[in-house]
Image (cartoon, rainbow, N blue to C red; front, side, top):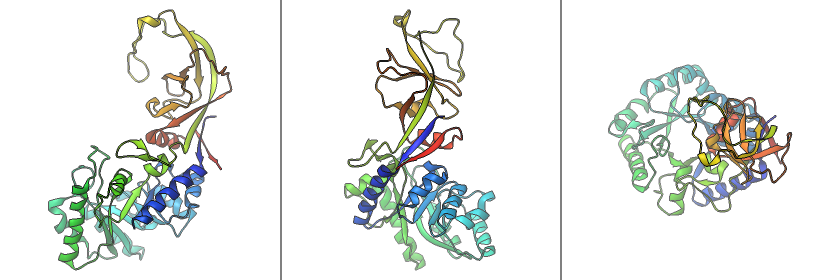
Length: 357
């Protein structure tokens, strides 16, 4: 059976690197746990690291966190749908919001559950995903900040996700100015300005982060060890916390080019081949994962002699060339994954999840 591993020592290294970094800059941060897909084993390892605030866009994942540690602070990081309002109040201490009527429903449910629900209001600074439009923001805040059992604890924005609009000093200064405007106009205190994510970390290193930005939501850099702004690894951080292993279930020498009339494949693509490969053969292996588990573009062998030849719903074909390593049926092949690859694998119930201590 194919399986994915999480190496706890590497996870701890990345965590302590980031935690020390944020502490030195007086910034609070929350771990975005989406990549773990609510897996109990992996969340347990994460909780053991000691941070107390976790963010996720799936209420079932926040429920798992609360079940593991009732004292953990949880943030629901997308505008809640009507059908999850009750659970958001139950399992999320804070939620990020952009819609007046949704906040009304949160208020009503918070009253029912006798809870004070905290919210962060998101502002659209040009990414055109979630967020109240800038010209409407002051009126929006005026209509929500006195709702029953609702406490506005922060302002936030999202960048670099939908269209790749990068955070910069100008964008984040705008967010800080809205915080100052609200505090002056309504005589309130806004504790959090959540303008940071993995992609914003380089601005801290460059001294370009406005001082009022005091809260970050970080997933990718923790789990991948990457500078998401420049798409390169961070020095002294591990970028192979996760690895995928899949077993060879068939191995034969076969022609490089298939024979017969070519039609479209499973994904609707018509394949093309180079005439120079006519008559050539190579050692080809089939492993026990497929497109139901992961898209090949998110998968890379740790062995430079192993190439991905193709995939169907439940099988991936590898080109081993001359098979210099003498792989055989039953051997485990090792792969690294990018962020989306890990998410796909974590969502597959067919892939075992293992912890490596």
